[in-house]
Structures are given as C-alpha cells and as structure tokens.
Image (cartoon, rainbow, N blue to C red; front, side, top):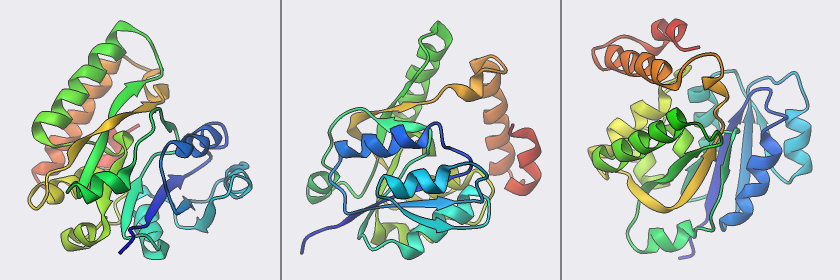
Length: 221
C-alpha cells in the first residue's frame, strides 16, 4: 500500500516567514500541506492558500492547532513543522518509513552566525540524538498509527511537542534523519541564547514535576 504524507504547520501572524517555509517543502515528497491558523491578523492565511496549502481555522495554541491539523489530515504519515523554519536538504520521508523509521527529526541549524548560536546548535542536536528528545522546531516526523497510539497532541498552549516526544520515546524513540532544518533565531534577539535556554530548561523541569503548561506559559516569552 502506498504511503501518503501530510505536512502540518501551525501559524499565527507568520506572513514574513511562512512563504519560505512552504517553498522549502519542495525538498520532500508530500501529498498535502495543512496550515492551521490560530487567528492571524496579517496575510498569513492568504499567503498559505496562494502557495497551495489547505488552510484550517482554529483557536490559538499550538497544541490545539496541531491536533486539529491531524484530525483533517489524510496522510498515514505526518510531518509537523513550525512556520519560521525551512528544510534545507532533499529528504524522502516515505523511503525512510519503508526502512523502518516510524518517528524522526531533522538536524537543527540557526539562521544566525554568532558563536553562541553555533554552540547552542551543537548542544541541541547532541541532546536530540543521545536522548531521542527533539523539540518541535527540529521538525517531527511520525507515523500516524504511532501518533494515535501515544494519544497524540494535548491541547496545550506550548510544550505540546515535548509532551508528545516523551510518550513517543516509550514506544519508538524518534531517530535523527539525514537532513537539516533552518530555524529562525528571532527569539534570541531580546536576550542571550544561553539565558533563554536556561530558562526553557527550568520550564521543562517544572513541567516534568507536574506544573501545567497553562501556569508555566507566563515564563515562556
């Protein structure tokens, strides 16, 4: 039976980055692109439609948006991607699935060229490979049946990726895929990459010890 691949991208006011993200999907063999918009006030939905994506409206919140995207997706394979990312290399996810890869992620590269960002890149990729613990900005490839077996995304405002990967690891730890994904470094413009990374690790620890994403969101800016 031929596999089909659905790419799902949550958006909110991403008219600047989304065109590059969608055009970069030429690097993978896919069957549909679903943009789940959380109420953009810019041209994001129009741009998505003009570039061939199916646009679904949703309440705001990545977990809610991604879950809704899966509900309307037709593919038996799923690839989740952030709107401010770009796939840099050609990669055939369907072939990798035939070879036994049911969940995987790409090698992260930041669009900035500072020393701190390059060090952070290496640490992030090392963590993802050694612990099978990627985050959503690395792109997440998942067999639909495996996604459903884990219970899928929860309707969290953030940390939905971390939460899903923790459950995936118990069944099929996500594997590094042979490709790179370019990620915007915009979140580091207000502060040092290492300070932001330290804060994010604090948030993750609080989550692991039972704090809810709703209560932790105030720390995530």
